[in-house]
Image 1 (cartoon, rainbow, N blue to C red):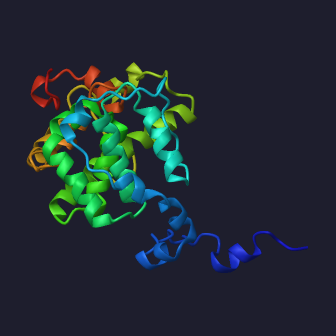
Image 2 (image 1 turned 60 degrees about the vertical axis):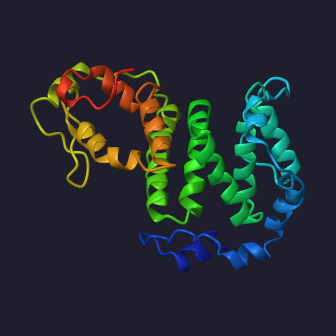
Length: 265
């Protein structure tokens, strides 16, 4: 009888870590029929010249907004779906999303990325105010992958890493049906008096008084000043303190003013 694990075990014995699949290189992507399909029609969407002021003032009317999940292989369908997602909002936000789609599909990469960067330098304040965290992180992902300045890429990657970490553990709360749980008072009291080990020398956060996040914010502040990505990092960090995240939940329990890590609105 053939064992379904035979081939797997021959190349990946139990107990031996399997290496992560590497990102496909440019040549492989160029030769990929799937990638070519994703780019078909891109030139038509990229050809138009855009007046940013006019886009900013134009509101999209595409019926009730529906958030996209994943992306259609057809760029026409994908951009149509995004238009619905941004219905009721400024067309400048849709233009920003369209640029990200074109960049991810490798359409005239250098030229399209320059349009994306120019947009952020010209309208960063508006974009930070109006875009939700999902699209702000799509922006930082784009800066992290394509900017010529490694400092910009590093701050962008830092931003994306923070948000994806939050997304990961908040997803776990849903998957384990623990969204409604609250801190156990006896455990909160326990961490005030003794070290609670977690893993690899890490220990439990001292709820109410810990200075870890304040010190981290002090270290982050210089990075938050780096245009155009630092202010995005600052905006997202501020929102993580008011949305339903671990940061906000620990903030609600914090008692020591001198170790607070957030700015009061």
